[in-house]
Image (cartoon, rainbow, N blue to C red; front, side, top):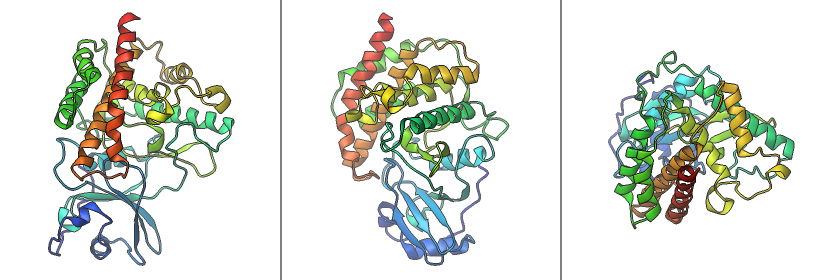
Length: 357
């Protein structure tokens, strides 16, 4: 990886408590000093959001940074890959994809309990609710248009040219991902869910023909975007833990899940008055993306939606399992278990619609 190495730790290893809460200020300041980063008047506070990796705002007398670290405890295989987050954001610097500036990476868990990285703090607005409450219709429309632009820009990056040719494997993306998330789900499963079992059987047998390899974010949704403080444009895409080389329609359909999911279930816009809000219809958003990328038509759209609803259900099952084990990063992690079954049922509904359509 092209990231800078962390400074060797001369201090003795303390307990793992630092990995669970706010990092110890004295140890953090000592690491920053040895890394050549001004730590005068250092203050640290947790940042909200992020079910997977603990994230903190660091403020000093001269700058502000974000520290993102692995959680402590036993982790699922390939999960919490913050080294990959650092690598892809560093590689995308200077492209049309807005990412924070990477500062440094540290894989020495002796400092803060687990590996971590430091990046610039990007000021702007963050929305969990994809209806973008408090904004006017024109601004909502413009923000959704810019999100579309960012997706197109990401999927237009030559991954070889930015040094990411070893960031993932080419081809058979959906086959590999369905297998991965089926295994992750089974490893964290608590109670049987018929719709998940049905999807795990149906999806690998109905992967559409045709393939394409691009950089995919893997978790492209509204709450992983920073919007300019006053303008209707994306200034940073965050949370690249699930990024890899894969099929761009996986990214597009993941963002479009929002149109399938009701707001009271999981950050969706299904059933709301989109026209009044200025939010585009799903088909219009997809058509704009296709037009910008020169794609004539997307067949098997319901497969892509079913796949992502299944994947989200598997992810939330893992979040719930970490909460049960005491390793979750967000306060609402335990409630994620209640969303797994309805998301899986929505996914199975898409699969049945694909079968009959």
